[in-house]
Length: 591
Ligand SMILES: Nc1ncnc2c1ncn2[C@@H]1O[C@H](COP(=O)(O)OP(=O)(O)OP(=O)(O)O)[C@@H](O)[C@H]1O
Ligand SMILES: [Zn+2]
Image (cartoon, rainbow, N blue to C red):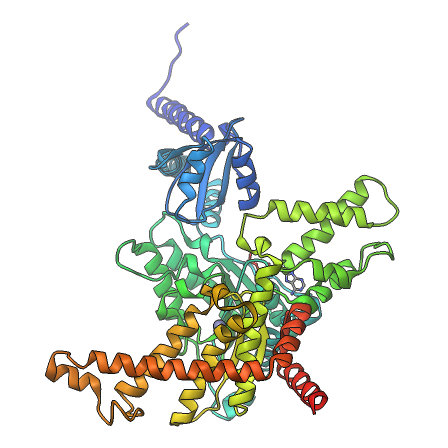
């Protein structure tokens, strides 16, 4: 029998055949293997250590892809640390640098898909083609739908008092922008929350929307990092367009560093720049009284492009630090309120035992404990569950030095910070010491003592000398308590600050008799050096003298130094009132 086909049917059959082929290829590209699983970085590192990771496609993107030994593909966060590749290699992981797999095959797959879609659009009837194009649109603009009705309020955030206070102001801005406009005040547009992971930055942003009763749009900087040119900028524009439809709202951009990394020319990425520029343009395009606040979060403020931090952009920066013992207690209380805890569990004590835990880790501690209790069908969450959960949380941690901070180091830091604080109170009572803490700051210092000099146009010589004494207070306390041989590197920043002050006093301000009323930058310009030695000797002499004075002040008040340090070890953070109280009580006792 002869099959008769006319031209039209032939073309149709050909098209169907080639389409099925393309669909087939696309199918194997995307579905043939399992969907990649998203591994959290901690879980990923655990797999590496256990030798379960076969290959990692090493790229300079925020996300990394790879394959486990069983063939399962995964995606994880790229730490972009220096020794990362070596760590992988040491654990017998195959590291492929060009990521031929991920990018090229994705492009091939994508072209295939686009061809399929295009073919289908031509081929198929009108209504089905409309549907495909809808799918297509969805693919290219995955932006945040507003999360209406945010239930998170400040009551859901424990600790973080300072951050909460700053954000409280913003609630009023959002609720009554007219009020501020009436006074000609510029409403803040952008706020950056910065601090270690898991300290509640997302939570605080949600609380702002929740308290103000406005919609909350959340996106992540890493969502914008992609290979399709121009899409990132487009997404930003449509995000803001949508946001503007509401009179007031909060836009939250997590991991802003993925977009707004410092541009150093070397590893500039046009696509990122375009997205970042779109963001900056949108932000400067707000009207004064538009009640839109853009909040962004980052773990590292210092890696951000300065363009982001200029006035009118993200000009408010709020630190969200690790919780101190009090805050930890509150966070534990909050997250255990709906869990059947055995009455034998003392959360106050647990707070003491969880130094350097973030809020997220505390939450996970209680959650792990609850899971263990449930597995055993125990009637309550008991000590042994918490104990075991404690090790799960700690062991799951990357080895940060934090859990390794010894009691010895804590004591050292406590005396060092107590030294700064006490000297401030003794020599410059007009300064405010708002906070003294032995919790490490995000900038890598062991602890810090916040010391704010009154705001003045000009500084006197006495004030500058006092500032140097305050800087030297940390090292002086170390030497008095531990002896000269046990002083540490912890004072390096302090010494740097003291040195630049003293040099400025001589070089620019004419505040030293021997070096006189000369500006030494000008002198050096004319004389090609030659006076260095005099300057150096004079600096050293003054510094030595100030250091001796500082030590003598601390030695005379050593009982106060002890008391402040002990209180710090106990409470980790003290504020000005606590400090004043300690000093008043002990001075009274001494009399
Ligand atoms: N101060 C806190 N009070 C109560 N819960 C907290 C606090 N900090 C963190 N948590 C808990 O940890 C979880 C994670 O916090 P969140 O996502 O806000 O941290 P983050 O700072 O945004 O972290 P990342 O930098 O990793 O994005 C919260 O959902 C909450 O359960
Ligand atoms: Zn110091």
